[in-house]
Amino acid sequence: MKWSEIRKAYPNQWLVVEAIQAHTTPEKRRLLDTIAVVDRCDTGSAAMDRYGHMHRRYPSREFYFVHTSREELDIHEQVWFGIRRGCADTAER
Image (cartoon, rainbow, N blue to C red; front, top):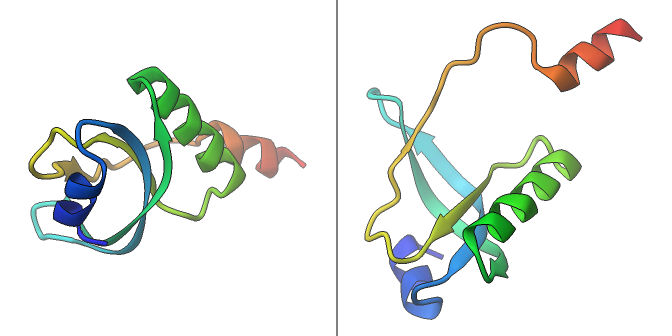
């Protein structure tokens, strides 16, 4: 689905979504071309918790928690320096 379709189907709601197809612009903005709704949540904190659960369970997949009141998704890629906690656990074994 496109973001505009999701907004119409789930008005004024917190969602956990997965990027099925996405790309990054030269300005490091992440554009989600095709999105799947994973879960609907009552609050932002519930959506964040659900996102965390999904991210830990499927770390190679691209999840976001969003509210459909936003006309556009404004996602910027961040560069992470150093070792992430999950990677450090694996490296020590």
